[in-house]
Length: 361
Ligand SMILES: C[S@@+](CC[C@H](N)C(=O)[O-])C[C@H]1O[C@@H](n2cnc3c(N)ncnc32)[C@H](O)[C@@H]1O
Image (cartoon, rainbow, N blue to C red; front, side, top):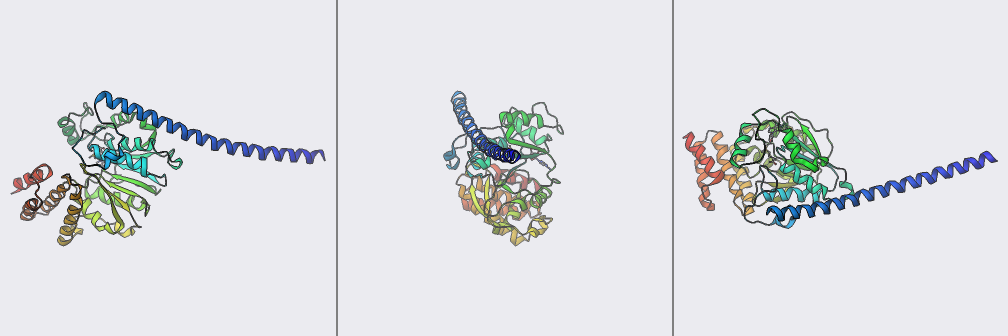
């Protein structure tokens, strides 16, 4: 009898402990969410104080992110504009639901990564708590980085020689945001992705056909149909026409999500599952007929130019560069001349490619 009573008391205690523990866990989660909210508010105040002190625009301006305007100084040092930096932080703050991973391919000094980390730190959804940004780069200093840093007087990489690692500089720039970032030092021409769903995929490393093919086959299959956002940082840029050609092949599986004004970025939502045979091709210029090339480049130019800010014109420069690479000098020249139909000045990327044509003539 006494043993039965003891057993009942013990079972009762066990149930009680279980209930207390479950409640405690829930409370801890709530406390952690509140702490995050307080940290967010503190960061916003710090950010505002800093912007007042330095005269630089602060980062919390989702409305401004969508609003076209004059070019502004970027908040973070990097190869991205203020508008795209705002857009990246808006994605992780307001759109990200924690249903998949956040991946940043080609992070360099982190202007993409830090802005996404900032947005993530301000995301109040419980499902987003504890999530990190997977930041990929080979972190190897190159001559063109040196040139950019010198031209724009950037306070990074000053003592680096080509071939040296810039990972310490990147980590230093992350500062407090390091806790939101998983760094992957890797060659994206060979990297594999383990297959977890990806909710936000930012691509700033499709710098060749090889990188394009590997990123397509490794990362794109993990996009979540109907949800994921694909951000192409190099879309309105003249040297990366493989992005336009492959994205044209995939256009049926995406819709335009945002054509960021005053920026190179175009973002797409993945609308339906992409057949794996489209992602596992060894694409090259030979994979596209001349007819498809014309269609693809003209199609994206007409969409990109709706940014109303002049970056869309770079698609004409991209097409001319493609034709130059095909050896069609006359076609490249004619393409640059189409700028007159759209009343584009011969400047920026158009002038760069025009100079390449002159040199090749
Ligand atoms: C244009 S920069 C990216 C700029 C950056 N997103 C920013 O916010 O300023 C391109 C980056 O891609 C990286 N990259 C180029 N080829 C790569 C490869 N094969 N594997 C990994 N990263 C690579 C470079 O190291 C460089 O940091």
